[in-house]
Length: 125
Image (cartoon, rainbow, N blue to C red):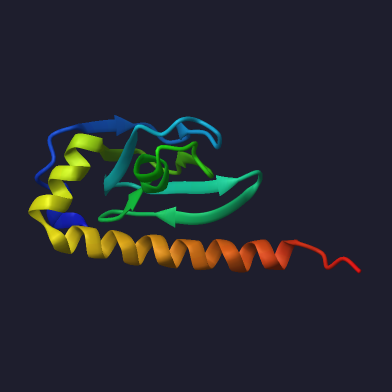
């Protein structure tokens, strides 16, 4: 989905399988795009999503300048693009489609989190 945008970004890092990328509660100053490999997004022992090539993660903490709402680790060896706030603002300004795609991803993830939260909470009387 984001592949064409990620291919132009210069800040590529290699992350080995099993490495922690960030932990829930960390401050988020960058988001990531996946060039290759797979990333587990999780809270506690629950995997919320597996993010693969052409997708992004870590965007919420970058956008709202708050702490990470989940943890991320490399399921496989990965190549990732780090996108800081300046690069994010450039991407959005130069590519309105990037912003629209990101909003779609965030909306889908928020809906999934709402459903997950409802399924794990017990009703009180």
